[in-house]
Image (cartoon, rainbow, N blue to C red; front, top):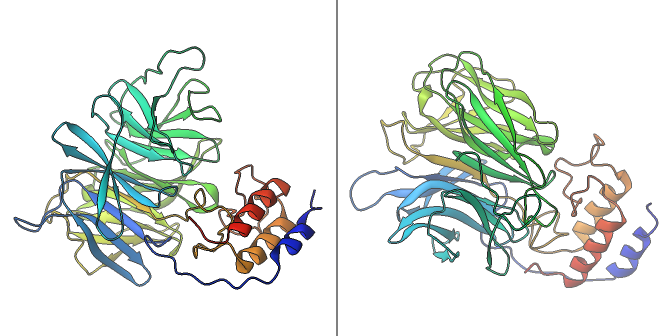
Length: 388
């Protein structure tokens, strides 16, 4: 299979590359809060969390932000839902605090967003799912066959797109247990590929757990954050294998104010979970297999202090692979340093090989192999050099 790598060397030549990568920094984390506030006139609602060293800064004050958001690697923007004059608006936020509204057709009723990284942004709305494609066209998600619109069996609290399985994962609560629904999509993303799969999982010691966060986890897993009002030490941070929907425990938490764990995500920089403790207005970090209160960060989170009821999400900034496939080291260029990383991954081949870098970043077409198909994508990006 590995017979065309010599062509990369022929393409490489002697290139001198210089540029700077601006905007969001991969590895940083965004916290979007729908009920933040430190006084009248200024309500920080989009926060930037830098993992190493851990620090928090304000990106954007409140503009009717609902607390739901995600990062769109295609547009290199944070996507949020906010309340406007005509309903729920989808907005794109830049690192300099500027933002613009994403126009979508139909009623302004978006509640959850899930970017795919290739131009589509799915969103949950009343009685259906829709998506805005790379050209800005709004389309409704259809049934498996025919022209009928897919009718979701319920609404959910969180939404996440997994590129490896090409599925939407929806999170919520069944009442006394947490609920995750997997909705497979066709390769072009225009319709569902099969019936939704509900997974109701019982979490010991929790009374009414609900999913408050999805995020990329280690080794292709999906990190899941639960919130619950029980004060017991319990697994509130989970990992899910998206193909099999097998769920394992990442970490347990239990401390006064545990009901304020309103959001959290996995940080690949720290190899730890970063969790919002809204009751104490702090961030806490949990390493894999840990249990207890976690490590509390002393700097105030700038959230709604003394409250544990706000809606919030946390998610990492990921590399803009869809916009710039081939930029493996996320420096805004596809150059000789990426070529070295690609060759190493190409020689390993299988993304499941333990020696493959975490996340298999050279697998541009997400088929779990780094092969000639990825090479073809890499050469095009290498010749273009500069990321869009």
